[in-house]
Image (cartoon, rainbow, N blue to C red; front, side, top):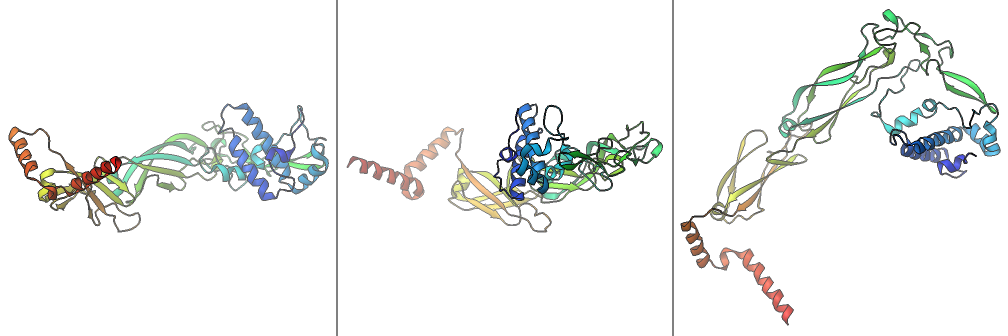
Length: 378
């Protein structure tokens, strides 16, 4: 099967700039990446084709050769059986992969020092109460992770022996091979880009320098955190490969729904039912506050459902600030139920004696309804 044109693969013109190539590559690589399409063979093939095209076009010299000779520029001495190129995906596009998929795609990232693999970042989802979000909390969490091997002290070698220079690449982490008109650099197949190898691996960790183990950490959640707050604990992720730096731990917070309060930023809201008699005659109700205290709300005569009362400074804590939000109390006038005969008689007497002045909103509404019906009959 003939190969598709590399520009067609990336969906760009032959005059596309380096930035346009990179942008097109990032979009397609994200769309067809195997982690996003598990088990999809067509997506895997498309991903390889996209990577192959970008590997050539991102290099000015290779692109010039391709523009002049097409695929023939890379067929002499560089093709493998069945067509295509034997590219090491991790070498050519690892930097862009990190940019696209961030810290949480699993596996270590490239670190310094001979290609040593930095430990993977970890994610921990934590749920706290609204009260804990208000006051802050210190708690212990247990994380399954990898830690440095005690037997080899993280070196990966038996009895702590240090890795030696890779004999294949002589510590470079890459090897060169002739491919068509050019010399192509690939990741060393012996040391996988690390530049060093273990001659006698540690039996406890198999030469990786790390072992799986649960780790307990003390975590301090500050007051005022909100839903989806992310807390980074530097160096508390997985141990790096053979003594490389560890990754980080990211804690993502979610807050349980509260049985009384609803939160909006630093403000909290509370709906309070009040008896019809209190709404009509006035009175006072006592409501709880998020800090465990109580607040007295004065209900004026004639209060209607939906009336809102503000309690300044009774809301949530503000992150990294001594300030607090406000609490808003919304009233709902409750219609009495389970009336006795005497109570029913009293209400009927009240209804008989009540005039328009007692229910102005109701009187106004039905007046508009009457006018509406009269307009329809004209």
